[in-house]
Amino acid sequence: MRLLSLVLGALSLGAADIDGWQSRAPRAEITPVFGSMAAGGPAGQARLLIEGDGREGLAGSWRKLQAVKGGQRYRFSVWRRTVGLESVPHNAFVTIDWLDADGRRVADNRPLVAEYLKTLPSTSTPEYPRESGQRRQDWVEVAADYEAPRAAVAARMDLHFRWSAKGRVEWSGASLAESNTAPAQRKVRLASVHYKPTGPTPAANREQYVPLIEQAAREKADLVVLGETLTYPSTGLTYAAASEPVPGPSTEFFGQLAKKHRLHMVAGLLERSGHLVYNVSVLIAPDGSILGKYRKVTLPDGEWEGGLTPGRDYPVFDTHFGKVGMMICYDGFFPEVARELTLKGAEVIAWPVWGCNPQLAKARAAENHVYLVSSTYEPVQSNWMLSAIWSHTGDLMGYGREWGNVSVAEVDLESVTRWKSLGDFKGRIPHHTPLPKR
Image (tube, rainbow, N blue to C red; front, side, top):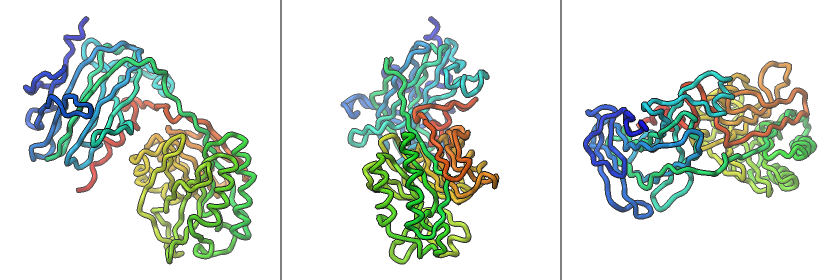
């Protein structure tokens, strides 16, 4: 077998071969400091160290080559500890490349690739394993499950350090092992309500959503998204007059419905907090409790002129099916909002939206590889915003054509979209976004 003759594609920089791991750098003059310790890992294992020497722009990795079987599933795992890094996703991460016997990246013919590219050929690109959520003191596990492309005979694993002048990363317990576990699935049913309340009171507006929520429940929705500031339309009230505390009357009302139907719900409201009023989305759990709220960050003229105050945070919330973020209406015009939610782990973004350009909805979903669920007050005939479920490729999975329509789509949050020349783009996002400002 020619595996032993594979070209490593990088300069060996003199560090000892430690259990098959070798130090390397893209260029000798930007080589960081490499080292190792025989113990001290989260389970007492050896540690591989890389750190800066005070200079800018250093980059290198511990690299290992391992034979694999094409078509076999594998579980990768490594433990990571960092000290003094400016941005962990940019400074300390893992890549895995699938190689042929000549050390070249193989053709990627895994089913999701062929399905999305409509049989166009594609060369495999680096995989970026993610934090698994497992921790041991100050160590974090980075892990993922993969199916090796059929043409692969080797996996090239790199434990990276990059662009931190004085920080340090330690790696321990790295492994790539065959797995018989079937591909994971996380099916969730997402529902969008296409309805604009007709007043004349906040209470009347709330009541008008009852049959629509019941319909979503009959279709076994796990998450249903309602409209923006829903106690306000058609009432003739000011923002302040339509506002209420959170928790308050509306969260109590929708909480009872969420509990009755055992589903998650997002309701757009106007929140009163002392002398301030916010445009908010509230995420309600299947037990009727409030999982969290998001205060709209971007305010158009009519809202700040009407006395509303912007929020400043981008919270993401854990549900039984995955991580949910929220944005509101005008937020869709600014890519920063959806990107911040994505960087915090959002897999689904709920979007109460009075109106927006639907091309921006497509962009927000595609550029972040998230599922987007919108509920708008625009009629379809306006050729403006839609009440819809948008896939993580930016395609429409269903939308409301008439007032009172409830659209439901089942999605798999474990599914991966691989783009030509980019592979799993969502896996790249945390590591390829612009560096944070100093």
